[in-house]
Amino acid sequence: MYFTAVINSLIPIIMLLGVGAAAHKLRWLNRNSEDQMLRLIINVFIPCLIFASITDEATDTSAGLIAELFAWGFAMPLVGIMISLAVGWFVFRDQPSTRHTFATCSGMHNYAYIPLYLIGSLFGQQVVGLVFIFTSGVELCLWSVGVTVLSGKFDRNCWKKIINPPLISLIVALLIKNAFDANPVPVPVQKFFSSAGAVAIPLGLLISGSTLAERLQHVRFTDRSLLKTAVAGSIIRLAVMPLLVLTVASFAAGHVQTREILIVQAAMPAAMFTLVLSRHYKGEPVTALVIIATTTLLGFATIPAWVALGQKWLL
Image 1 (cartoon, rainbow, N blue to C red):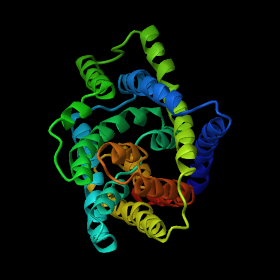
Image 2 (cartoon, helix red, strand yellow):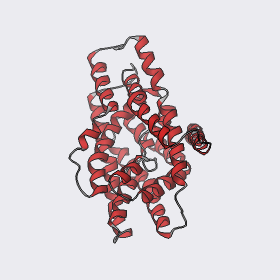
Image 3 (cartoon, rainbow, N blue to C red):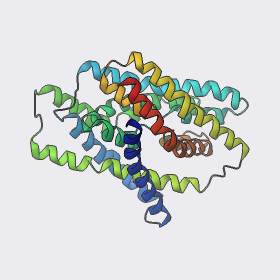
Image 4 (cartoon, rainbow, N blue to C red):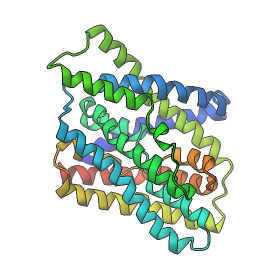
């Protein structure tokens, strides 16, 4: 039952990624158009989705749940990066740049479009808004710990990256939701935010498919060093981290909503955004791409198993 439900939820994701890849092959999408659409998604559609989801009556925004989600959001990638650093020390001992890129990419999971779609499909839209509280913790870890590991030095301006339209939308929505007992937003306004927000995840998946198709053209997996990177990254991201997160969550996650979010987040492949970071902070983009591509493709086989196991174990 659990396994079938996950498969049924995963198929539309694969199809949307496939449409994005096809759009790139047909030259309907290129890097410039992808960047423009991403700006629109991040600055308009995602904030609308956050606002609509958080202010929904069915969404629980109690202080204890918010604190727990934020703490898990920060701790999960932090532990992943630390484990990846330890593994990287043995696998890439004489290659510091590769080691740092490997640690950041293997440690950071895909916390955006794929898990958002799965969580909404499996557990309902009332949980989707809570995912953004979790991801605010993830982003704090990404811009502080992740960037420091990747570049080898702390970026004093990292807080500027953390304060963005999605975070502002989250804070405003939480303030409004907790300032009123019920129906804090007029119905027409709520419908506007819901309609605009509904576009975010499908468009994000399309862009992800196009981006992945474009980047994969430049990678040769026959390279022995890249094969080593792919295997090590996949073991950490698709085996070690899911088992570790589910085990700890079984006794340390107190809220049902937290468990539902962790079940999906734990099973995710590497974050695609780490490829952008590896370029900007002088890491190794090829290493990042290999980990992202391998864990994403293999993830379609492992995600149903981990999510089904997590549902049976934690719920």
